[in-house]
Length: 314
Image (cartoon, rainbow, N blue to C red; front, side, top):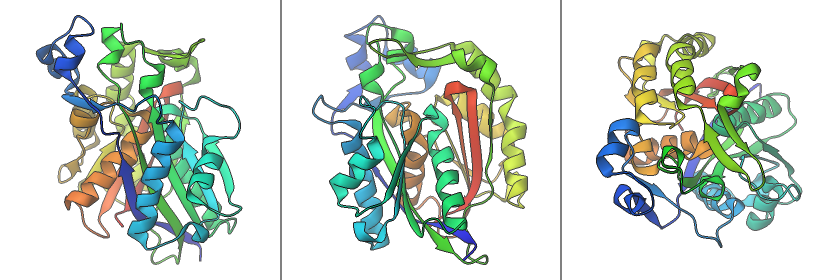
C-alpha cells in the first residue's frame, strides 16, 4: 500500500436555521443586502449545549456508517477546527471518546478556513508512510461562538457545522488523494482573525476578496497539475465556502469549465474548516458526482493560508 483514498464522507448541521430575515431583527441589514453581497440565504446555528466536538462526532459517525466501519477500525483522528474553547483535551481526543475509538493518535489542526484540506493532507501523508491504516479526518467549527452579533459585516457570513471523511490505505492504482499544494502569506495573516478575549472573528473583506480572486487561481491550477489533470478534466470543484462573490469568480478563473461548482454557502454560510467536507458530502449525497470522479478541494482563508488537492469521489 503506497497510496490513500477517501472511503466515505459524512456531514452534520445543527437543527436551528437562522435566516436573513432573522438577522434583520438583530442588526441593520436585509435579505436583499445580504444576498447581493455574499449570496447567503440561511445558515445553521448550534445551541449553547452543542460544543464543536459534538458537531464533529455526528459527522464522523455518519462517515463511519457510510463506509460500513466501526470506531475500532480507526487508528488516527485529525480534526481541523479554530473554534475549540479548551486547549486540552483537544477536539480530536474528545471526538474519539464520544465515538469510542480505542487508542488512536489524536490531533487538532488549526488552519482556520483551509483546515480541512491541511488535515486531509496530514492524514494522507500518515497513511502513505504506514503510520496509520485508517483515519477519520474532520472539519468542524462553531463560528457562532466567536461572532460579534452586532457587527453586520461578519455576523451575516457565519454558520456552524461539520464534515468528515474516512481515509484509508490504497494501492497505487486505487490511490484517490492527489499531492497537496499548500502555503501561506504570513505577512497578511491579519486579514482574517479570530483573536482577543473573548475571541472574535474579524476580517478585512476587500483584501481577502482581491487575494482570493487574483492570487489563488494559478495555485489551484498547479494543484491540478500535480494530480496529472487539467482543470477541464475536473468533475467538481469544492472551494472553501467563503461567500458566493469569491467562489464564482475563483472557480471561473481556475478554468474548470465542465465541473459542478459547490455553492453550499447559500444555505450554510461560512462554516470555516467545515465548509469543504460539508459541501463535498452534500454533492455526493445528492448524486451530483459519482464514484471515481476527480474533484478539486481547495481551502483558503485564515492566516491567508491555502491548501488544495484533487481527490477521487468515494
